[in-house]
Amino acid sequence: MKPAPFVHHAPRTVGEAAAVLAQVGHDGKVLAGGQSLVPILNMRLASPAHLVDINGVEGLDGIDVSDEAVRVGALARHAALARSEDAYAALPLLRQATLNVAHPAIRNRGTTVGSIAHADPAGEMPAVLALCDGVVEAVSARGRREIGWQDFFAGPLETTLQADELAVAVRFGRFPTGTRTAFRESARRHGDYALAGVGVMVTVADGVVTAARASFVSVTDVPSVLDLGPVLAGTEASSESWGAAVDSAAAAVRDHVQPESDIHATSDYRRMLVGELTRRVLVESVTAAEGDRR
Amino acid sequence: MTDVEALHDVTVTVNGVRRTAAVPARRLLSDFLRHDLRLTGTHVGCEHGVCGACTVLVDGAPMRSCLMFAVSAQQHEITTVEGLGSAPDARVTPTGESLSPVQQAFAECHGLQCGFCTPGFLTTITAYLQENPTPTSEQAREAISGNLCRCTGYQNIVKSVLRAAEITAERRAEAEGDGETA
Image (cartoon, rainbow over all chains, first blue to last red; front, side, top):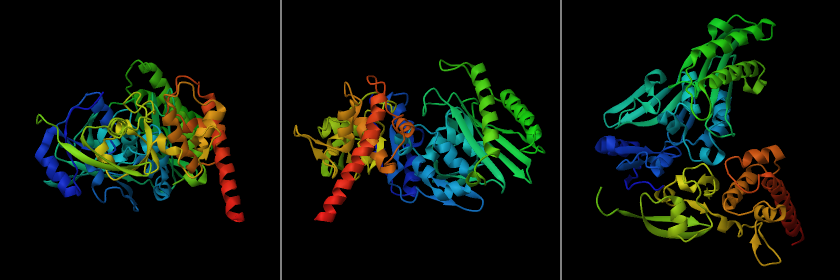
């Protein structure tokens, strides 16, 4: 349970980090919070020859809110994102989801960008990036590029980030005025990997739903957004038809997901669970307190 | 890899004392504390971040020392269970030990049996009570959800969190009272 030997690099700037990554290529891994990487190293599931430790890089821990997006730097810890009042005011979903990431001690060290780059199907933040139509900003010695979420996730634990690239930030897109969000997951113990989870956004204008989308945890291989507009749009959120619309949305979600069976739960159970969670988050989102409405 | 691993001089402030040791890059912070600095109060359970026994405070925030490398802790401030007894609100017991409010509460409420997980609980709860000085029973349970204990069944640990909050408040009131009369 000890990592194999590696060469430790401690760049001070993004430029230095990119230069080291260009040099070490596939023999290197980026170390940010390490809350997923270090267990993998401890168990020797991976033994990269080089670790590029970006914890000393200046200027990567920012959380910046603009009119269009919340931009989260590569060294912003989950706890900082959960605490940020500016981020919460702009996009309540970020706090709603982040508080489901593992335990406080993990959130104090783990980073939001790292969690997205890790691309675990059980991870909350990849699903949130997808729901927010987010973008990953990557830097390499070759230059800078932006990768939309649809092009970023290639498979479970696999992204299109190249070996010489550093994800320096992600941008979570903000929702239109009148949008409410909610996020729920179910785990055997709070903080464990979720058996299933779901986040939703519901846009309401004059009491009528105009748009709705959902994104999932642990029941799809890669982040996947389901447009619930066809089943929910046009429904009055407080009317009697809302209940039936929510049932249809839950059914659409059960059809959409492709959960796998493992020792924790069967595929059927996860499918049933994510349908029920969808029902709950939809109800929760339209009855959310004023402070949670954006 | 070269045959001989390069050593890094790592300097951290542990419980208020600056300590330095030369270690390989792969030295986990937990092993650095235990083996290199001989502070064996921090316990190592699962070594993959699940059990919480190795939790220490890094710049005041609880973190898993088994999921950090010593080289990443360079120049940071670490508090281990050994440092809790020298907190300003620690008090010396009749038997001569100095106990922080959380340690005192664990002793009073029988919050431990074998004691293996206890250092992680103590550091976690110490930081938590600074954030939320008056937790409910439910919040206390949530606060310790990242730490595993195989002996107690958690009931007495939850009680200890609540009692620690009381002791902290009592000692703060005492200290403020002293300040007024001094």
